[in-house]
Image 1 (cartoon, rainbow, N blue to C red):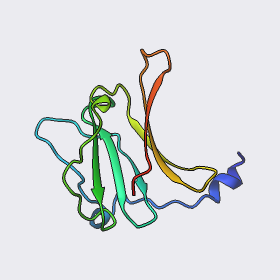
Image 2 (image 1 turned 90 degrees about the horizontal axis):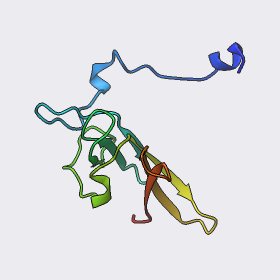
Image 3 (image 1 turned 120 degrees about the horizontal axis):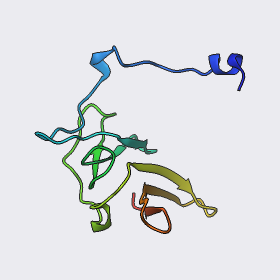
Image 4 (image 1 turned 60 degrees about the vertical axis):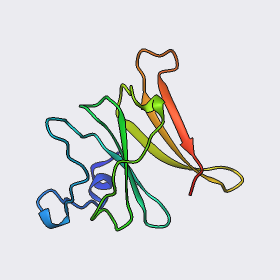
Amino acid sequence: MSRNKLESIRYVDLSQNKCLQYLVDREESQYLGHPDSILLDDGTILVFYPKGHGKGPIVMKKSVDGGKTWGERLPTPESWANSQETPTIYQVVKPDGTKRLELISGVPWDEGGFRTAYSEDK
């Protein structure tokens, strides 16, 4: 990609704007990081992150006010308990128009190389 094209990409740096930064979760003596999130059509934000540095049980939380406040941790499938990589969430639209959320987490020692979970819940 040429330098001119890179310069035309818009971005917003919020790193110094503390009034726009919100705490999603905290746990004493536990690293919580490497989040991935998705903004749903109704404005809900879902966030997923490992309880550990890049691996560990995957945590899921939800915000209904643009990320200003976050609910409690939500229940997750048992298979998410031993994640070996950070999760990535996608919204997939199937040919019939059905929207599906699909979460992928790597499993380096597994022959397939990753695990996936999906939901068509609203």
